Amino acid sequence: MVLSRAASDTDVSVHSTFASRYVRSSLPRYRMPENSIPKEAAYQIINDELMLDGNPRLNLASFVTTWMEPECDKLIMASINKNYVDMDEYPVTTEFQNRCVNMIAHLFHAPLGESETAVGVGTVGSSEAIMLAGLAFKRRWQNKRKAEGKPFDKPNIITGANVQVCWEKFARYFEVELKEVKLREGYYVMDPEQAVEMVDENTICVAAILGSTLNGEFEDVKRINDLLEEKNKQTGWETPIHVDAASGGFIAPFLYPELEWDFRLPWVKSINVSGHKYGLVYPGIGWCVWRTKEDLPDELIFHINYLGSDQPTFTLNFSKGSSQVIAQYYQLIRHGLEV
Image (cartoon, rainbow, N blue to C red; front, top):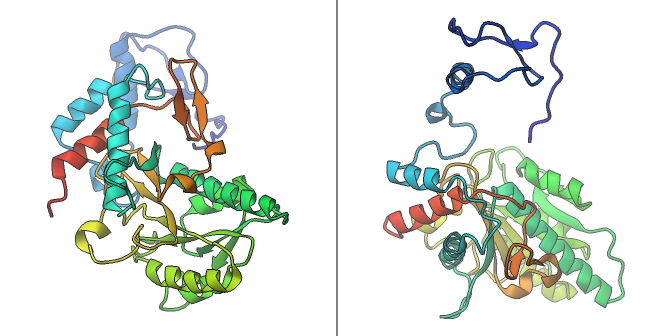
């Protein structure tokens, strides 16, 4: 969401680019007009003003997909009017989301049995996915501290100083201290040794990045896991890892299949990935998957039934379009694991 700005005194109206008998006077910019205008005129005014936007196909700065195949565009337009929150009304879309979650969980080597269902959720993007993962870590840490009769009011999280701003948002919005590992000349990702050294009994997780926003570099998740294994044995703590794979989650499994960064490492408990980056879907779609059901506290899942039968939900948003979920399923079955 972008915060709105007040209009200036010299720029308070919208003008039609071309003369038209339907638009004889300027339209107010920040107030609804007194009278309606024809649909053709409204389209022309908006379309002309949008020409001042950048061209998405030339945009390499926002890390999102800007082109999809026409067949998927058709699926998107056919489902753009579906409110995905009503799972009883749109059970096939719900099934598609479940298939996507399971496909992604298997891609990340989640320890699932033959008939076991993966635990995960589709989100608006990786920012929402990170909020949900962080909340799960905070609640699990709080529950453990309460059971031990210890204070649970000062949680912290360990990240590198190179993290995306959504981690700072999570820390501020949900009152978690953000402890950043400083970068140094020639080393622009989180140093595993320094990160684990900063871990204390109040650390809810260490957040590693698979694809830094600064330079695309993968952080050494395996090294962090191995160091945490030693520290957890020494201290009796159970400090876990979350992998922010927003950029690398749909790259590493194909280009570097032997690289251990995912659920093959025992202390990796959750992973987020952006479907609208290298998942090849238009914005916005993201995913968060958990290692096991035990890693997502039950009290964070809401069960609603006023739209039909029981619908478990764990999201920050409620109403949400179905198009991007369907588009993600299209891309997963369209391309498969073929490299």
